[in-house]
Image (cartoon, rainbow, N blue to C red; front, side, top):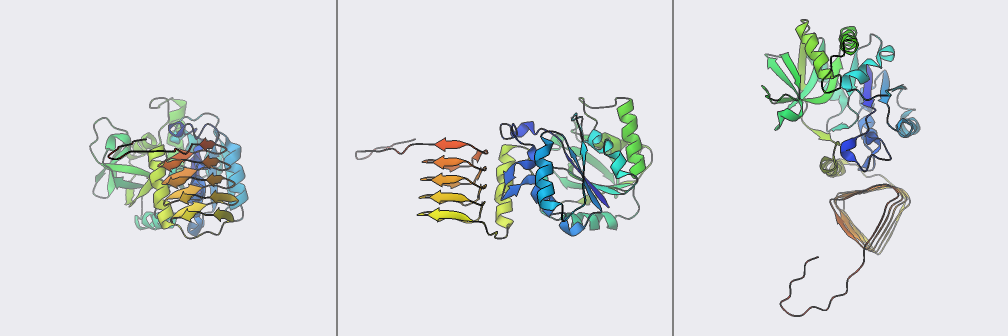
Length: 334
């Protein structure tokens, strides 16, 4: 089975961190988002991984080639305009061919490995496609499916009046590949889109209308890396799950409170780091307290107390120490 990873978007909800890098390259829990995604595909042994790239594509291609080319067969497809998930699948049609394939979004990390999802897909038996779903609290923000028995009877992208709380979780298995690609081609030629984007959800709905049977499988939990609040939450969860990784870094007169992820050539001087803190390579931390935060590469942090913070690459954050002479019964707030 082939795998398609759409990873072409600019990730505007993560600005300013995606001004200089694509969203899949944002660093959390010891590596870029795309690294966590690919790690979870290793035990699936896909025939080929097709990455749809666009915005600052060279960064993704360089990182993936350097770290995963000896594990996966990799191919890249360039999407020059980000016109929706359906469009990103369609432009990869020539390399997908007629093969069954899995779609895995480039900004969603799942607690389970993809091999578990593949088993669910296999257990579904005869169907044109299987879609991962989970009950969600705010269905207006998701693609939503309605079921009759075990079959999908309706899909809708971000409905104004949801008739279900089963949200599409961002992982899809497509068996009737020529049918889906034909539907997408028709949508693009006839410019059938929603708010300027060709939605995969709409294409799957057209398959249902044509009489093809689609089923679902459960996704217990996913970690959305699409905005800063969820990025920090995902960093916490992944650090809680991580295995120890040996990196070379310098600690002097400092305390490290696990779980943390600290990259190579990091210096930590007279500081307290952790818990739930990720510091990328070549950064320098001095006279600071940092917890529940993500610090990018080659950053210099000095004399600050950071909590629930995201600091990008090559950033400098300098504070200053205060000297106080406070009388009895005083209240001081900073």
